[in-house]
Image (cartoon, rainbow, N blue to C red; front, side):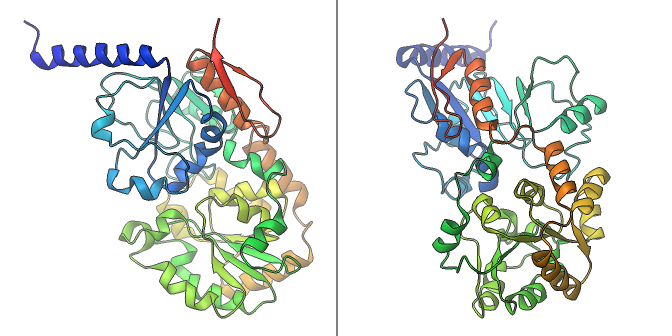
Length: 392
């Protein structure tokens, strides 16, 4: 005898499939933990949101009470609670982190990945990724690592070499430095320094952030402090339990400095003439701008965040490494006076970590349309304002 829940589930699937056929639209569900997760897929969403055959829905399967804050910079967002999403049929599920929303009605799952910094065992997996229908790889290095670790098979049909849509804007000219600085009320004629630490109680922010800001704010520069989303989270494991906005804003107000107002770091990467970090994915993204990096060496962070040694070495090879606030300030001064130092190495590492930057959004759209049995048409070189039509 068939149990009642199974009968109910079949009925729900049939009803949802019928309704889906009636409006003839493909439903895509985007899942995110933080606003940064959303920025990874935002260019693709913007490219497809005008297509009448596609409906985007957005959820936060792990912390649904944070949905509005996670997607606050997105436009035309259709939020859906994970408990409601479980009763809906989606043609595709998109995540940029290792999330897995419960969707009993079935879907095709797409992993677009988050970051290229090699943290938290991301490039040395001890689990299988075979359950994903598509894996949109950022670079060949990660693909090789996944195959070597046994996470996927070399001949997997899920593999797609895409790149990172988020960084297309760093190379295609769609963001202008002076426009960003003027929007922040900064003088574009002054050099701009970006301090972008990663999140962790062991980060440089927790170890020396206040002292570093004090030292930098006295320099003849514009100073942008870009806090990671998690550094704004007052829970101990993320920020060390510190309200960093409240701590830093009074210090920044003493000079030409501010905390970056937006979640997407891309405009600030374009605006910056030099960057200070400890170990963040944004530091590697900054290599696409071919401008100097200052790296604060934090062995405790490397251990706690389980950063792959290869990525530690890569970042060290393109930056001036420092251990103290005094060294950091001196290195910033040197970097601004000699911006071409390490240039050749920066370009080589950027080419390794970002597959064909500038075209990742278009390739993502094409791969999604293929998965959804839609044919992409009219893909502009830069804007990626794409529409899809049913395949023949």
